[in-house]
Length: 167
Image 1: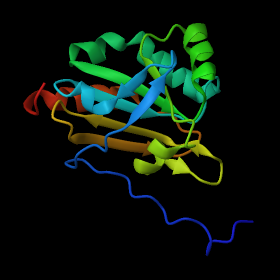
Image 2 (image 1 turned 90 degrees about the vertical axis):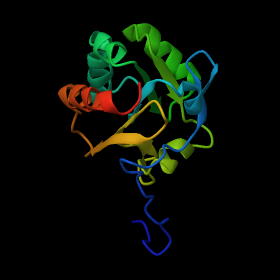
Image 3 (image 1 turned 30 degrees about the vertical axis):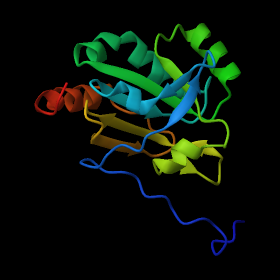
Image 4 (image 1 turned 30 degrees about the horizontal axis):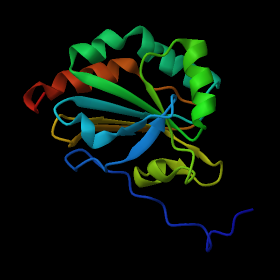
C-alpha cells in the first residue's frame, strides 16, 4: 500500500495551445533525438508502456502500417517508452518499425513525467499521445486508460486539423 501523503503530486499534462516541453532522448540506435530539432515539421509523440507488450505492439504496428498518413501530414512519429535502447533496437528490428523508438530509461521516465504521463506505481509511461505543430505548440492530447488502445482515426483527424497551424 502506498502512503498517499508520501506520493508525489500528480504531474500536470500539457494541454493544446501550450508549447511542447523540449526533450532529448536516445533512439534505438543510441543516437540523440531532440524534439526541438523538428521545428518546421509536425511531430506525433506517442508514449507507450513497454516494448513487446500486446496492446503497445498493436498500436505501433498500426502506425507502421499507416506511416504514409503521417508523412502526408508532414509529421514525424517519435514513440517513447521507459525501455532501454537495447530493448528498443530488438523491438524495432522484430516489428520492422521505421520510426524512432526513444528510450526514456534514465532518469527513469523523466520525459514521461514532464508530459504528465508517468505512472509512479507501475514504473511505466501511460498511453499518452501529443501532436505538436511545426512551431512546437501542442495541438492534440489524449491519454488512454491502462489496457485501452488508441484510435488511429483520431490521429488522422488531429493531423488534418493542423493545416492552418504551420507545416
